[in-house]
Image 1 (spheres, helix red, strand yellow):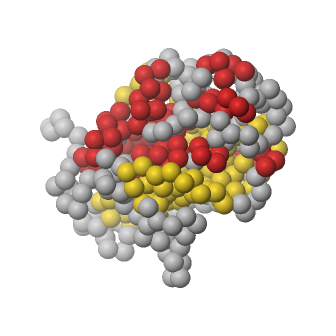
Image 2: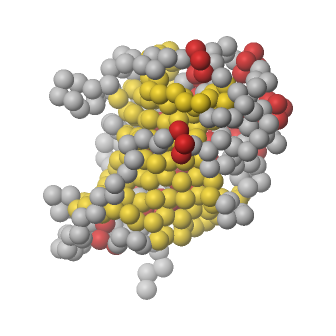
Amino acid sequence: MAKTNPGRFFEDYSIGQVLHHAVPRTVTVGERALYHALYPARHALYSSDEFARSCGLPQSPIDDLAAFHVVFGKTVPDISLNAVANLGYAEGRWLQPVYPGDTLRSESEVIGLKQNSNGKTGVVWVRTRGLNQRDEVVIEYVRWVMVRKSNLDAPAPETVVPDLKKALEPGDLVVPNGLDFSKYDFALAGEPHRWGDYQIGETIDHVDGVTVEEAEHMLATRLWQNTAKVHFDLTFRPDGRLIYGGHVISMARALSFNGLANAQMIVGLNAGAHANPCFAGDTIKAWSEVVDKAETGVPGVGAIRLRLVATKGGEPFALRGPDGKYSPDVLLDLDYWALMPI
């Protein structure tokens, strides 16, 4: 028997299949340092233990997207090693903060399958959960990915497309225990804008841009153990190593600090699409739209729903062309809920 892992192909999945992903990982303060070295991340709650304590938390958590990347990376060898592309996300919830010293592991259930008309690929939907050392779920989300077939003669499975929420309701969101923004220090956070200052429909150009380098992308994929071949192997994708989608997400989120410095914690992921490929040399810029707002019932804490769009140097606020398709400059279209001081 071969002892190496070729990865799963589309015909290897079945509805209800549960995958327990290797290898558990203990996160440390080094995770924060590396994350902040890769991205211009400056949100105060994830930068300062003292700021976090002033907001009712025991210490500064690991950045919410860093925790997401750890959980996501565990799933790659079992789900997307032979992927053509990661297609989207839904029903993502951050259920509690991840702190230095926590050990994370991941498990996924196959909830949908659909072979493509070309007979060479298919779409796999999975619901993934990230658990800590106490078996508490810290993150859960659905994603779907296009995967190659190995045996083109393998029969197509029965098509099952899961019925997913278009967006989480405010009641679906979990505010971390103890979080209290009633004594929030806006000066230390970097901007004076609070929840009440944002209007539904408002758009924000985050102004800054970062040109992606091959080295930093490769560091990110190694850090979070995302071993998908399209990110590493030039023979697998001759037009260039595809920049890891999580790298684009984190870069756009970090750029959004300029205008949304007080959108501190991501607690919900409604939808997400990697609209076009990103390659080394592309310059990532970002803009946001305020989609919705809600009160949480927690002292000083409001929820704000944001659309975060990353582009490769394109004009802000241009999302789709006349044909309804994403503009070629759009890299990412992400819809999420964040917590902000009222």
